[in-house]
Image (cartoon, rainbow over all chains, first blue to last red; front, top):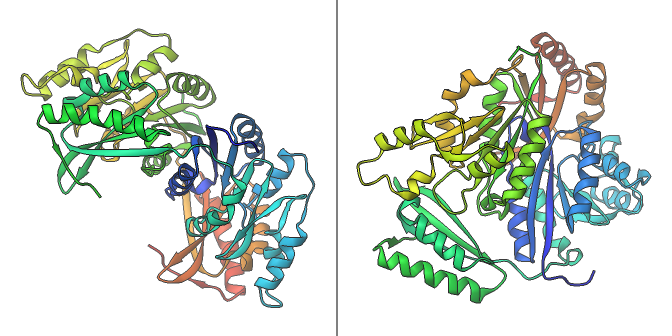
Length: 250
Length: 250
């Protein structure tokens, strides 16, 4: 793939356990931070139930809209793990045993342990490229611009390193944060002026509560460090003028 | 609204800070658990950036697909808070000062403190219904089936109680969880049989790690307690037969 300046992605979280509220999703944050660091901007996240038709439709929509699509969840051994079969259908590919994956799990499990349930985990779309799993054996897989990862956060995290060469990012998205002991309404109009003067920089304002005190984090994001610095100096000007304290924040 | 058996909802998370990975979303879990308890099932969550066109398009799509739509984020006083104006445009309504909201904030802030930034928070779609905010004054609002809440989790949480009478849920979605000291592949085929015998019950299987030990949570969900009990007894049958230990989990 030719290197582009701006590269984007969508994340598709497949899992009833997130929609029911039982589990809070943390994979979005893990993936987005990692993708940012290699120059890929996440522009949409969709959380959907374990329903085949919904998975197929979402994949076919997102893979056309974005450079990359990352799915999480639904690649385990149980009946509610239907991501691989759904991806095969989305791409009109055969759903079959992946020979290389079979060999990996055959080696990973002791003889006799590689049962039917575990074999389900290497049923994949035909010719899928494996994403190796250094934590628990069972690999994820990649078809064209769609990358399918597991839902368990620690396992997902451990698989990202192996993906780096398959993702061609653009300019990394840089950011700078200024934490202030103030409230948003005190700085809103000054901040609007800075944003108006720096239209191609993304300025976000986020209230926080820490050790009983309130504050505001201003986050400046751009691919260009000079633009961030220029914007930051304008913010620091009004902060000084208004005698607002800059604070540390964890 | 006439009481229906099944009532569904979508959540629209508006915020660059979630997409950048800087912040993990916890509002989905808060909203979904609360909605479940009043008989509303969340069927889709979408996380989008602070871009007007994207907000308008998402609201106009979701409000037609689902009984209710809940938005979080983008209703504060700063330049990146564009939810209210976008909702007004989505519904073709005037975007104007909400008189009742103005009175609330006039009373909430000391004289002189009700500045331009704070006044922005009561600019809303014409005739929007207020959602009261017991934590920090500035209300959310509701237009038809769309309910707009803030992004700060503690404030959002405090506003849900006041919403209860505006949401007409269906049968509450009940659930029962069985935690087992096993791995998914050991129970996958037995669990598939139980799911096949109980097609209108939702059975989820989720690996967990607790105090260095792995396990599997089986979650059974339905509006009908009898169906949950029937399904549960079939699971307990194979658990007993396989000599799998049932464990406690926090």
